[in-house]
Every structure is written in C-alpha cells, then in structure tokens.
Image (cartoon, rainbow, N blue to C red; front, top):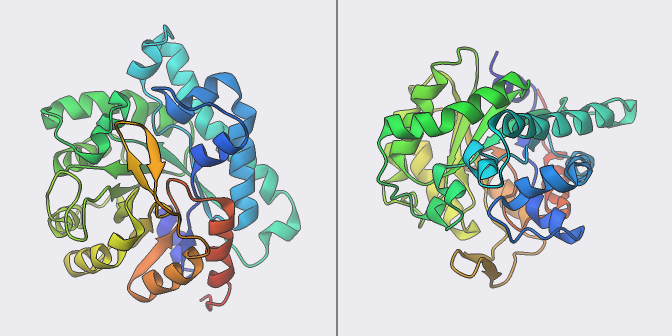
Length: 315
C-alpha cells in the first residue's frame, strides 16, 4: 500500500525532515565537493545517522536519505568501482533505517505519531554535474537517456528496502516524465516528485507547475506532488497552481529563505528564523499535507512544524 496514504489516513499531516548538508557542516564536515553530502558516506557515515536521529527527535515522520548526489558516475570519478558505488548508495538507506529503528525502539517515542518512513532521495541529473543545473534543467538529453542515468541508482535504492522514493529538486518536465516511466519497471514502488521552481508559477526550466501536476496526477505510483529547494515566498502561489491541477497529496519543503549562488556555491541573504511553524499552518490550510524543510533548514525548524502539528486533531 502507498505508505503516504497509510499515514495520512490516520494523521492530518506528515512531517518531512530538514537539511542534511547544513547539519553535517555544523558538525565540521567540509562539503565543498562534487559529491556534496554523499562524500560523508565515504568518510564519516555515522554522522549521517546522527543527523537522521536528530530529525526524528525533532518530530520528523520521514527521513530523506543522503543519496541526493550519490550516483554511479559521481563515485566513478573518484575511482570507486560500480559495485562499491552501489553499496555506498544502499548504505544511505541503511543509515536512515537504523536511526529510525533505534528511535522507534523507545516506547515514549511512539506516542501520538506514526512510525517514521525512510524516503530514498533521487536527485536530478543536474545534481550529478555539480554546476547548479538542477536549477536550470536544460540538459539536452532525451527521456531515454535520463532513464538510463536514473535506473542503476533507483534499482539500488529500492533493493535496499526504502519505504518510498523522494524524487526531488526536479527542474524539468522531461525528467519527471522519465522518472514516471522508469517507475513502471518497479511495480509496487511509490515515489513523490517535487520540483525546484523559479517563481510562483513555473518550475526551473520554465514549464508551468500546473502542467507538471496535471500530468503526474494520473500516475498511480506517484504518491505526492510538490515543491522543494525553492524560496519560501514562492510556496503559496505554487500550492494554488498544483491544487487546481491535481488531486494527489501536495508536498512542500522549501529552503530557509537564503538564496543559493550556484557559481560561488554559497548562500546569501537572511534565513526566515522561527517562520516554519506559522508557514506550515498556512500551507496546510491551503491544501498541503506533507511539510518539511530543504536547504539551510535545521532540526529547530522541523520541531516548530511538529509543535504546530500537535494542535491538529487526528482521525
């Protein structure tokens, strides 16, 4: 059964975790690397597990694995053979599952909340280029070429036992189409697809998000449709566009409020401190049922969402 549906049948909202990389950097990790947070799978995997544990403690109902930028090609550039690369990709799921199971083993952690899910992150093709292409989406690749790129990682993540797939920061409709076609090779597997957006109506490469949502709404293996890795101010109008075009659950997990410069690979501007609890309520009232944070968000932001969610009545 669709794992998102299972949770939403009992709870009004499902809380997604926040940024992995931000917490790893806070712990002293240097992520100025083409592998980004996937680098830590090689160097200090125990820190990834620790971050997952912190988000579960903050109230997350779903952990997103550290596989966003973990690809066969990326590891190959480090001289890592394909079999070892696949093992590293699967380790990302195992770390999240271990953190979840250890958290859930304590009875006090099971009160008034669902058993958390592990969503295996599948970043876009552009993320593997490490040049900000996930915010543009003009790849010049066919759907078949994108399917060939995504297939090995998707297969590895599914075989590792993830509860579902988080196909995130997708910048172009052609890549979303490729992912839905590829999912058909794995019956019984569910995924959400969330797009990066350049404004309140369009995903990064320019397609109206309403068009994307309408297309995905008929795909039985797509469990939710939404937005991530996008400025927080664009979320309300994007929600409206999705809501008018699709009936599936809507997911929103934007950035903290800062703006990313893909050229300098730095963040600029101010974060929206103490904003996520109030924003979550507004998004929920407008139709969003899966809520979390993306880049630069912290466990405190997820805690704010969880504190607000406790005020809602369960079924």
